[in-house]
Length: 378
Picture (cartoon, one colour):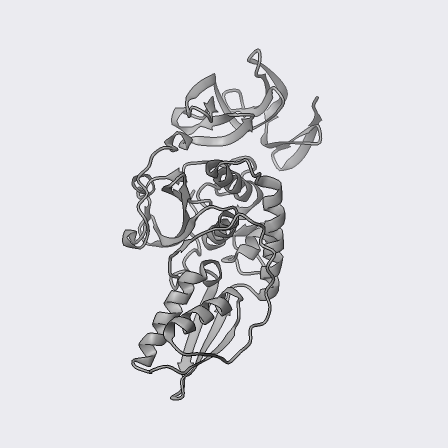
């Protein structure tokens, strides 16, 4: 089931743009800006407006002293250009009211889906996450995968939040959001990790408003939809890669967007990531449930991109440790099964249907119906 609910309530006002990222930790804080700034031309006004939007200011007052022509048009053009310079913040704009007097005093009243206090917390959270998942030796591909995997593994699609479910804050601190929150969170993490990215707004399955990302990896653009890589309803360990570094042709099967506003994505280099579900990586090998072969257990060599079948068994909720895999064997009643990767010998550990497998502190955690159980493993 795809995520279509409530994605469009606040994102149609956005302007897509590219962001050129920095690879340093963002230690900036949000401080009150000085109101009533004075500028002499519209480029200066745009720059000042972008700074204040980036700072999540709500009452922006700028005095314009230059030549006044079509004031209304110039004010709106400046707003759109400022949004292009402040992509993440403008993605959180809920509404804008613009006014001016005959003396050139321009006011932008902004309402955001978040607050300055929440955004300080978001930045601290992102710094902490990236410190743990991004290493200097990583390739761009590895960085994008790590960010996708973190978001998909630690969040869920939903609207039951105190903060706006359209915000990155809700995703980071309440564990759920809608597509806008997913895409904005991914945008911020990608940007700070040194990945050039664009925030994309469009539609899915015809007319459902949606948001996702474009990322540049090794000089080529690809689509990344973390929302649709996260199954609904939420399933632990059920990350997929069907919308991970895909081309225009691939994603246009169910996504539409104004293509002229974005760079083209023609490369299919990472098409080997398609049909990879319930993935678990051990060193450079990813073990996964292959949706192209009735969820049979496969492995993917991340160096060559080659796939091969491990067992002619339907394996879901895959996890592992050292040289052992653990999975729910849907060819055998969904029983909890252990696979020795050296001998390929399978052993049934629990003769009941199990779900939501994960390893924690030498224990294998799993659910039987809704009750969690744990099993000591070596």
